[in-house]
Length: 596
Image 1 (tube, one colour):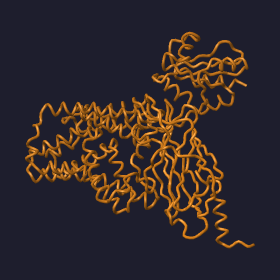
Image 2 (cartoon, rainbow, N blue to C red):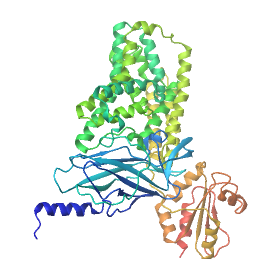
Image 3 (tube, rainbow, N blue to C red):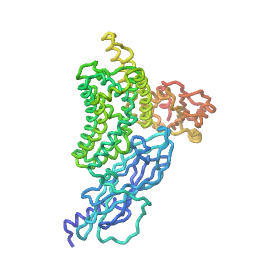
Image 4 (cartoon, rainbow, N blue to C red):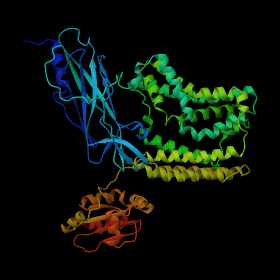
């Protein structure tokens, strides 16, 4: 019997879907996470219900952040189904497992996590008109997975890609037991996989929600760094004539709206050209963005402490040209909007998600309404001189208020740096100190009466120092060239009995000299290649705290007073060759070359 063209296409569709349906699920592994998709039923009837289970398994001591409320930077586990082709499936809110509480020392708080083996369920229903006549239909599903996997000492953000599966719809459903049962949780419908529970809201209700979301940004802790500037701007405007006061206020509001216009533009580009959406919090998955925000806050803190001055307050106060004053107000509004959004309430995320599920025009309007909500209080305040005159007069209280906000600013910067991957954290901290010194040079080493040539010389040196420090501390880590093993006395003794050379690096997280040794000795490619080629057992002896085995051994076994210390045990030799300095790469290399 010869197959028709439609039958051939259908057979190929079955073959393509065979490995991604519940008939033959295959487990994938990405980094320390393995997972597979399994369907509750092999086939589903029109107007029927089923579910897809994503079975996760993490390696020992690794976990996902489970809740967006406690996860840093929106790095919680997200499972997002996306139907390919015509929309005949309605997915409900994913059902996640019960989470555990873990004290995250880097964040300084308890967070909700899931680890080990667990399952996320994606319940769905099939439209009644999914099949017009008898026959079968296969719907391809892409399930996106995002989230950071962490231990107590490090975090990674793997590219999980998507899990592909397919739903087979037929009117003749064979009786078969369910492969799994859903937990007793009542799901809520989700449209499009990312609009959430707000998808069913009417347009006007959603726009009101967006306006309230923008209004709430004015009380966000993250906007506190620019509060002194905003307060000074408003107080000084009380001394201006009414026309200029209103114009400066609306210039500030324009800066806020420009920020949200940028978000709306990014949303259009991503949807039109890349077929994806701009998810709220995605920017905080980028370590470069988080580090940049933290360093910006450090610089603004120094402004609050009076280390340097910027042109915005003076221009607003009318001490500069008119044009510069307006542009300064626009810039301040833009910065205020940027700093307010990272710690926004859930209402903001919901309004933003709803906007991205709508047509582009309506989405753009909704995002701009969020900006209008944030800008309205400033527009009202600056257009009513009577309200401005009731504000306290400028005085010492304002300077103390500004300095106090500087400390709040540093706290926020520390929290942001704490959210960075461990490999980046120390480099950003070191650079923050150097950057602070350079800003102090820029503003504190010169005055209004300083000669122009001397002023330029000092500031060029400050910029050069900042660039050099940035190149040194902010480069992405290349990864360790040497496969270090944790300190283990049994492992060391076994290697020495077998005649294997052993290299022990005693170090500590708080040891600056140890960081120099790492860069000048163990990051060298020639040294790392010799260690691997000669079969040297490389041991990292961590002495960061007093209760670690390496700390006890350093003092009581090897009789060394402190770190850094490196020891090389040559085969057949009872005593080790030791280096207590920071520049011994040549000597180490020479000994390694003598090994067989």
